[in-house]
Length: 512
Figure (cartoon, rainbow, N blue to C red):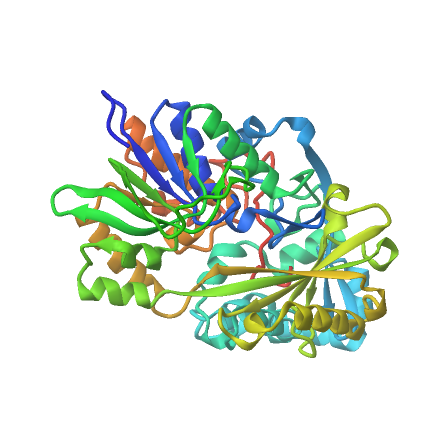
């Protein structure tokens, strides 16, 4: 890639929501762009995996947003008729019972029983009078707002499955990023005097948009449109080196060919004969959605030791889905059910048929059992056959379906699904940011993994849109401010449209 007149060439690392949004915005401005994706599919964690005609949404992606620019872009990429308006339904499985979420007073009181319900209210009131002294941990933050008994019922087990560590060792940043405005009082008021189609609190929305063939449909279409408008989307080339020079910043990239050459929609066009070969791309700017830590280690020459150490200090949580095919009557109406039972390993179960009938086949549905893991641990390394058998057993153990009803199973693994916020992550991110700002100002991290921020899909897209404005339009947006406003994530901001609410149903540090 080269500079052509006043047009600046840009390389984009990664063909997920952030990377493809950046590419789409660049070709709209007629800026030369090449997207480099190491996988054979676009979409990142927002892809739609397909096995034998069954489609799986990796993590669950509700399309709703408070950002009008993102809403407009979704509908520019996909025609309105390609979206379904889906009812939102999710419940919590706890102590052998299913609790509605949003909270419904009759259901909750009936399941808890009058004595425990009174204890929960008393615990909540006590927490308001005598809140925990340390609210810097996720446990302290939740107990202060819900009381200890509700925390133990509806938060503790799920979060420990999700993150793999005790909740009192997790910083409150998870809550600040995800459930800022949700309180017991607000949930009870909503239960007793519900508004139709609640959108002011994200966790309480009642309906959402969804592409008929899953979220991957959005990004497959975006990749195709980028190419139709003159951009390049290169599949199965992993970025190994990001070249930079003092005083110039980033100058280009070196990739390694890992497989077939993709069309941009995820399906290889032809088999490449140059697997293992290196390719070089020059660029005036690089927009990166690759994991922040991996980006640091890809830099050549290497950054100082303290920057490399900061990158090594950033950790991720990984994820796999065991998708089980069953008769449609063995399913449930929920989009997903959160599993708070400590007796099973599964953390959440999706019913893909409740997301879209186009994901499943007539007379059958597919349940996606989600396991939160670390790459290389016993669960990650277990064979697909063993994982499918475990999933069937746990479904029956929970009483949600019979193991004998499982007709077929598939496993989809997703590394680096969630940035892990430990006590030192903020300092590590700041060390890297300061060094990059001083030495590689034309290197632009965007998106969830790219910025090591537990962003939703729409927030990831917004970081890409603002970055393109900075490059092409000369603006000075601070993209690190996206999704950190106190009222942004769970409460409607007066600065944003309240026509729709927030996106991405990835596992939250809440009951739902």
